Image (spheres, rainbow, N blue to C red):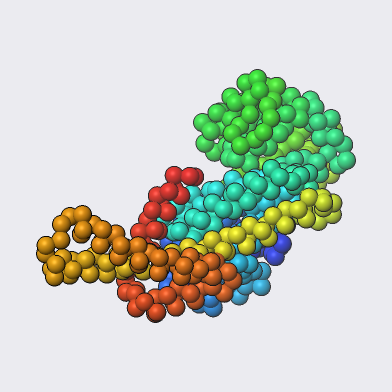
Length: 460
């Protein structure tokens, strides 16, 4: 089996395609279930963010896997396969590992170095685990990706190469002015109460806005977020730092129109499939006002009508304009160091996976040897019934030592060889040379997989 990823992101597809291809939570679950039902895939999970959709799978056939995963993405995204295919990218085996590790480090993000992607990778793994679609390979891969991402942020200054998408968006709205200076005293409306909206609300609170209104379809979630923000040092989970405690309150979505007329800055990030703020809504809100209205749309598909770009007195920053702005952002020298970390970690992961691939065969070989020893000792006892317990134990130990010494060097060496590139064939050679039962090897693999699943589920 081999790792395959098929996906699209802000690097390969225009925002219009990403918007249409966005997957709701229930659609992601159905996609994974259908992926495992497809013949080429043994396990799978999906990484879906505001600017990427990637389907990871362990497949036994490359071409069939690419065709099947591409078809499934098209079916569940609602974008026709012919239209979607030009924007899809495919990574296989080590290149797929390299891609995910780069994503985890923020190298493939719209804003280089942003750390929010680590939480999204963790969510992707948790989804696969909850649905039992992520097996040993994807558990190992995504757990290692999380460690690589954390290592990159702790050992380098990759964070300096870019900011979070929220911070970067607010900087674009401030248009060269310090964000804290720009935000001080402003009234903010945050639409949505999920992780991105919570991060935006916390960032605005730290930047000095005077009032924050949280609007959400589930009022209770908005109220919880508003309560946290109102407390001294209040910071939603997942954000860093602490605010001074701002005036914050929650409203239902039906009140968004009224709140829009009073807000100076609006941040929207919901899971809505249609527009939350239309061009007419915005035009009505700015009629007769002198102060400009700043809009930040972090949703995919978009929450705010792109027509707002053409409304006088309104400045809209959305995913599309963020992509254009980030293309001009300077690359920090630390990016090269992170690339080196990724390269080293990819090599280490590949070696570990290749070594793990031969482990069931080695275990099966040693099990067979132990059975041979037990059989020969039993036969000896039948021929020499007068042996006492001490003699019998000494003979048994001697035979075991002989077998262990004979197997030690070749099993250690075969593990070393198997961990090197191109070493996958050594497991087959070992099975052939010692005539090992394939079912015995498979049973060891299944036992290892079950143990790994229990262990990995406990880590997330």
